[in-house]
Amino acid sequence: MIDTRRCPNPKVVVTRELADTLMERMEALFDTHNNRPDAKLTREQLAAAMADCDVLVPTVTDDIDAALIAGAGDRLKLIANYGAGVNHIDLKAARARGIIVTNTPGVLTEDTADMTMALILSVPRRLAEGEKLVRSGQWNGWSPGGMLGHRIGGKALGIVGMGRIGQAVALRARAFGLTIHYHNRTRLPAVREAQLAATFHESLDEMLAAVDIVTIHTPLNADSRNLLDARRIGLMRPHVYLINAARGGIVDEVALVEALENGRLAGAGLDVWAHEPVIDPRLLALPNVVMLPHMGSATLEGRMASGERVIQNIRMWADGHRPPDQVLDGWA
Image (cartoon, rainbow, N blue to C red; front, side, top):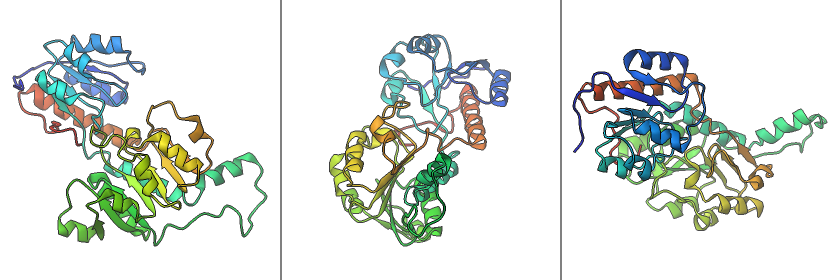
């Protein structure tokens, strides 16, 4: 049974330092304990916080597993996640304890889609390699055969996961002359497919074998972990580029490295990693991989909007109502 009784002045623990205006606003509204200065809480600190608060505001860097939830105090009734993804929270364990979990869907859609499009452009056009060449001082000027890449116009883009972000990427990609293909748990309405000029593939395997660029936009959960494993990576043709700005665990990183090293993929654009912040040194050595530090949603506007959604969810819950962004099944 979910407890929706009023909690007029909840004790709120925020695990990472947010923008000053957000922290000040939360401190004015609630009995808020902010993490200043910013540093990831240890497991012991996280457990102590969960034992003595009404609301926990974690981020993707906090692993809220079943053991931590089991040890939480009886007063913890809301986990108001700062961010859309909730793969770091054991939703089943939270439900069993009557703890509501919320997230911040939608506010980071445009930012993540922009970054995805940047990766789609940068990998085939070798932008990172070119930037490094200029900085090295070894560039000898323009030449007909210098830094040749591949155009993206006319290529087929395969989108894995056609939710908010996938659709935003499709809109951008069409403007660059890409044809849109997608695989999703459920097919989009015909009207939306027509708007996006998107072709649905019921079989992920068939889509992977037919497109030139693959971009991932599905949440990480039990169904999607290692969704692109060695077998599926092997279905992609050698000229294909793989883009991942979703979650690192969706791609088998070892299989990806082997495919890139052996020339079975043309390149990759990665903003997320299997074991963040640790990155496989073999990836660091590959020139055809554009690597970013999980910055797809890193805009000031997006961070502020996420904080406002967190505040909205806490206020609704504190007033005895179901918060608007309650997570029900883990697919944000």
